[in-house]
Image 1 (cartoon, helix red, strand yellow):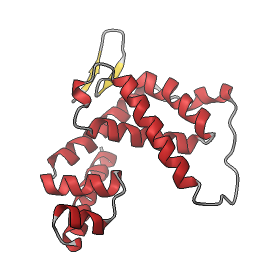
Image 2 (cartoon, rainbow, N blue to C red):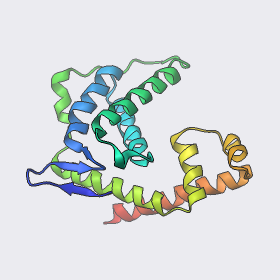
Image 3 (tube, one colour):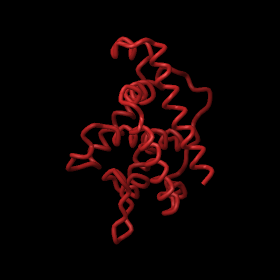
Image 4 (tube, rainbow, N blue to C red):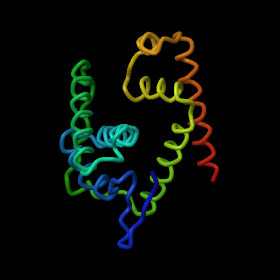
Length: 178
């Protein structure tokens, strides 16, 4: 999976048009969450889930699939938030101000490079470490459940998660140094 720039300067990553992702899809998520930070979180989580899914490369309609991933994450978010009582309300942002959050072409290129770097790091992890990291950080499965499902100790689960996080942090520091 790589970044592809076509002749009309369309930014594509993992078969997703990033201009569509950061304009239309982000606007749609914001309309449902009414919180820009939550919208970004859902968008980025959905992009991770999309790219790490096993069948994303074979999809005929990646944007439609991405919308399903977003809808599922929004549902999960709703159920998670319903468990807590908010102490303050999210700041409402009028629709006409949403464009100022749309990233510039330079920011899109930077985002693509960073996401590709993180994806490369995750792909380079040993298979068991990658699986444990995915289950724990992306799927939200508890360490004890992962240990039982993969027939390894909780200590080993912790080691796999720590290794993945250390590798990602080292890469982030390397990218920030560039």
